[in-house]
Length: 505
Image (cartoon, rainbow, N blue to C red; front, side, top):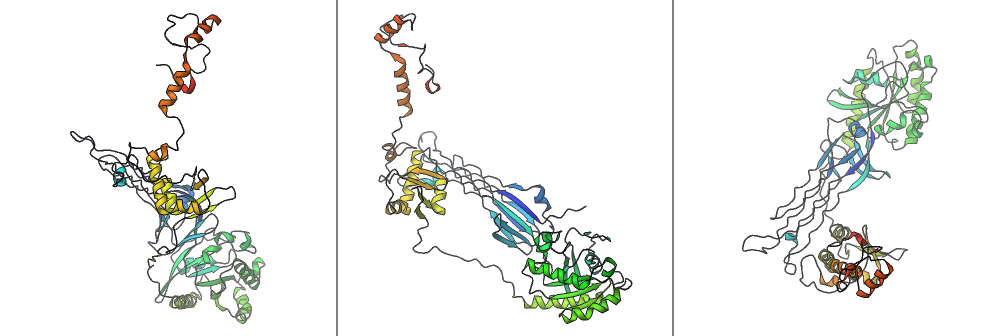
């Protein structure tokens, strides 16, 4: 049996950008031929495209986790990394993309409509692209930017011109079956139809689509029965048709009461008040069905409804009913404005817009927000002093440093940009060329001992003077001393030997 799914939650992960490469060209007689590190490739994006061959969201129900390809890293000899391939997800016509909070991101209507739901990360630039007159051979490269990671909700709202509403077993599926080529399941028990059925109807020169909404009962708009699950499928319809069961006395129901109950549910759902309505009295071929239809017809017409008496079994009244629907659909289509291609709107940044903001939160942290500055931070390798200095220069040129000073930030105050928090130090002047990967401006601020200094300190802690050795020999700590003039490394009861995992050379 075919499973129909019209609401799914997708967990999307766009591709990450590839890292840039740090490389210096070397060949015979050219020991320093200049930087030649290539750029990293951009990560693949995730796009939703409307496909007329898709009618349900079933594939995403079984595979909710979607990930695009990452971009490849750059390489030497100016070789750029490969760009990750975009991932195309085919969705049915009428799919609405929402956030988990209900915010609508896109309404995908029309075959071929495309929406980029998750953008891939930008690839980092290699040191060849970062070279300039001051940094002729950069010793760093940009990191690849992570791709978008988010959860979205896909809801399918069927696109149909006519929507059939009514109680279970009123004959909606039978009506679609005789008016179109659709073959829905039909049986004589309630809730036979568990999925919306779509059919295409030809009436004269007009062709339109018709759909039924299964499972409407009192309380459907509040979650009872199956109605709330499928009410969304009539939001796009142009005409609503009430299908009333003229054989209602046999099942102890009143057609007028059924109409009032369905209208109450439509009003509770909301947004359908402007749809034109028709009323169909079905099953007039059943004994006493025609008599009941003639009895309730004056009351329905007194309420302003246009009423049709039909039989889905004998096809009586279907021709007149089909042409009436075609006329209403044509009238609605003529009243709609002509659809124009989507125009590209350019919105330049305002003159007084700096592209970032600086605010101090309740914890005293200065928070810098802005698309550009946050991307710079994500692409910076903070283990490389030259890369950190390059970031500081960019922030200074953009005006972030000056804005922090205006907001009252002092040297050493915490600053947060994106996910990174650090102690702010004002820019210490112009960059001075030095060994690759270093920045002399940061050396003055770096009080952490170097690796060589830490190694020398460990060795100094292990070396004992002659007096200490003689004293330890007297105490029995050292059993023998071969040469008192040569420093001895003490291994017994010496906690410094295994300090930081080092071993004696």
